[in-house]
Length: 308
Image (cartoon, rainbow, N blue to C red; front, side, top):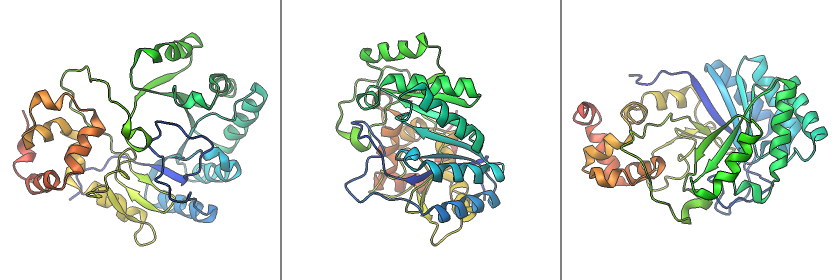
């Protein structure tokens, strides 16, 4: 039975290589060698994704523009198949307006749909904020859709950075810091909120090693249960792995019921639930074998009816 038949989108990890080392990076690897797809394989996978009715691809993982020519070929492949394409970048290439204009005009010509530019106090230790402004202004000039992903832990010291974005009238969206990868050891400030549902869009992620995960943020992190690992394209088709995600009732409930209700069902106190950030609560539920087993056993019965 298919519980989730939403539009198919995916985060596409072409390479783990990056030109900067941010203290907060979720994607930071564990010391294993950098991984990269062969360009021919990546093109073939996108063509298979088109056959599987994938309508949106976001190129991410390391810094995609370290392989600019490859990215342009992948963008053109997306365009041929009417697939919406986005690239996530740290903006290192925007040192001058001439350079950012050249880059953006080439991306626009190749058919890129949107540019997502990362910005934070951790990124900006390595990339000057003027680069971000240049990249955004070039997008405005050449008519390329963009937004700035303002990664923050909501501390007062980030107010000046946000004001920089406002002063320059840039389109940005705050993105909560996820405490995985390099950020695992960081001190978590207290959460000030009411009782959020903690629903998640559950966008899947494809790694350069061709492993597909049900969630692009936490999928690779839950090593005790590997609950979000769907399979590998060496052994399974794109369509089959999407179907595995869409037929998983627990994944559907994360999107619709939310993690807070699941935690309450398991006996977490309300005063405890409100102390969790979304991904941390997901880890407490889905990377703990005993909790995961309870959720699996109850998914089609008691949990399903844990509603108002």
